Image (cartoon, rainbow, N blue to C red; front, side, top):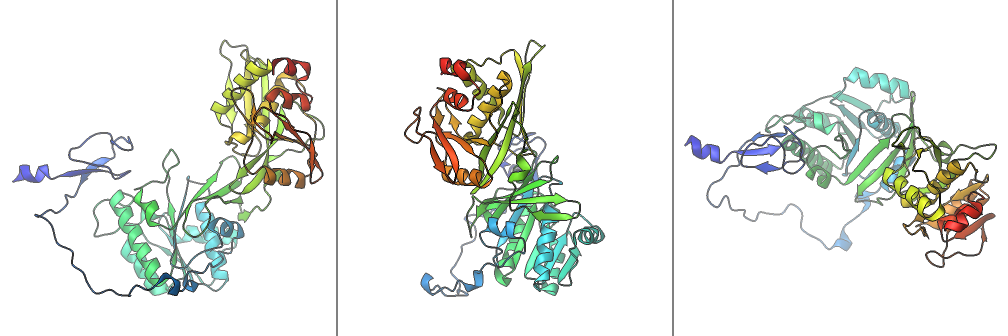
Length: 471
């Protein structure tokens, strides 16, 4: 009998929910070590219970007769967050906000809770990671003490549901879902089974009572949301809160949104007295120089549907070591190596005996190919000691053949550069790959079209005849 029971045992990964019939030291799905443990065996008995039809609670009606007023947007009180959500909070919706430790998730949601309570909408903030006194200290520091903001320190799902029954809020914030445990469910809080049960129970409450529920989620060391993947499927909106610990700048990015777009980004400034919206973040990523400086170039990146100007800086210096260093910050290291190879092959700029350092300003992350040409200009400028002109912005993707390829949303990028007062823009040619076009004026800014990397360097007065010979 014991052998049969042992044969029915199930071992489940606490990280991703992968199941196997025997214990293993490493998960076969997510490859995590030590995360597989024995789970309660599923009850089996023949063909299992048969599901029968029951009386419906609400009859089905044509979709045209369904009222959409109950799902109307309500402002969160934080305009940048409303921008990402597509208009605001939706009654009955479940949101998941994930981010690295210390990035400011609790501070942002406490601000949302306080702003909602200031509009006379009752709000319940449930904290499972901090005590109520600790949250109160943060609220005092950030000005978040409001009469309609209720605070509870709970780690049991039943107690959380009891608090919801007593307070009857319009907004429920749970910080975090990994700290809440269900007493009648196997596993420890934060495990796959527990997270699924807690999330499902809170979402049921949100749908039946018309409460907006915001769940805080942890992330793994590779940046993905911790817990079962089904958690992201259960909620209506998944938001990622991102930021560099060395910078006060933070961004909220929508990964999933059933009520709005997923290509919007909200920008925030995290300070000691709270978190504030940054409606024009360009100044954080561009250093305004009074004179020409070699090794610098300004690019225009797209964060969602918002163009952001960012400065790329490069330092190319002779290396005393046999293997020169290649160090990057805020840039894709593989694209930096590719741009260096293109400069060597097509522009005669050899850096194989030099240390190369490439970075961005203000903690910006430039990962899209549209910033390749700006990176190439910064690297060539530092290596040759020739600075690009002031007031110039550079856009374009670089191919392995040295051609400059077109980028998306070029009109939005040029409009933002012109608004910031730039006088010249180097952009990919509109006629075709590798071809050049005639200069034109866009909002008072001179726009020069180039087809190859060497031509862009010559237009900026960097490469001279040397770039022409190798292009």
